[in-house]
Amino acid sequence: MDNIVYNRFSFIGLGLIGGSIAKALRRALPDAVIRACDPDTDCVRQALSEKVIDGGFTEPAAEMFDCDILFLCAPVSVNDSLIAALSDKLPPSAILTDVGSVKHTTYEIICQSPLADRFIGGHPMAGSEKTGYANASSSLLENAYYILTPSGSVDSAFVQAFEALIGSIGAIPVVMTPEKHDEVTAGISHLPHIIAAALVNFVRDTDDAEGTMKRIAAGGFKDITRIASSSSVMWQSICLSNSENIVRQLDEYIAALVSFKDRIARQDGDGIHELFARAKEYRDSFISADLGPIKKVSALYVDIPDVPGSIAQTATILALHSLSIKNIGIMHSREFQEGALRIEFYDDETAARAAELLAEHSYRIFR
Image (cartoon, rainbow, N blue to C red; front, side, top):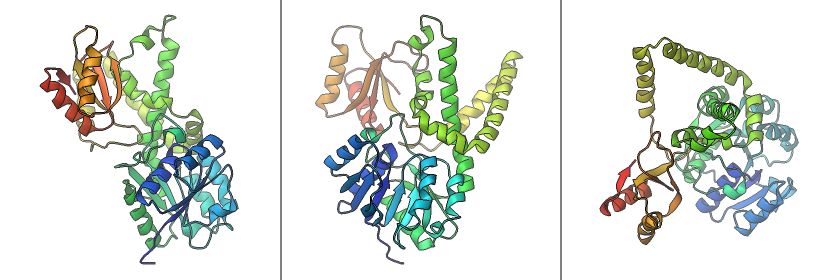
């Protein structure tokens, strides 16, 4: 087992995550054999036309099981329902993995199946508010943590080979138990999505008839609620699957909100300052990462004169130096940022180069 090589991959589910892993594998291992199935015929057709996959199907086909690794990339409940049917289809040397956001339900089933000694659970901590294969990218997992939760009976050589594979596509493998995974992701992934959705619903339900709050919602509101645009079907499944951890942590979070509310109601200036200061200190200590479940945004805020052609002139300066703009827009509200124009780039390196370039042209830049 010292020289385990994975070169044949199959995917059940070819959405944002499955598609991104397949694209990353194709980039890292151009000669690999990759097959996939997905009920969405358009995404299968697109993956075939892009030569990301060598075989595409709308449901699992027999030839897909001739593989080194089978990725389950459907919703957790669907993945769980497939495990029993896979027991006698995979070759003895094949590894089964998944990309689910919740692990304990899958492991309860795996431990009762013949696949227990070949299952390495996986969860790439990367994503987007966008969904589907059309938004998949070979770079989505770069520098993102990829949590691995191998069953206790998997040979360590298989785990090490799988870690090496994950590293080859640019992700950072981290091994932990399924129980620890579900506890951790409840706090740093599941809870933020619930909070974002609740905040958006709060604004929707309390806004006036003219939609004033929606119209003037500033960058800060949009940034912290971006993930509320994620798949409602997926998050329904996650909440039901990891309910115990989520409910416990929601109780603790609600208690923290009540503490905040009480200090504000008592006009406790020192207490309010302490809560904000502690949050700032801890948040500033986070290691910066380009990709994760909540994607980092590489943006500049630029002061421009309010005259015709100003935006076009700014964009032209960047284009002449081959700097690609991801998004550009006028800041009608500047609650947290200065600058009249917000320019978003694909990475921090491009944003930094753009800041230098625009400063050379006498623009005022804010980060």
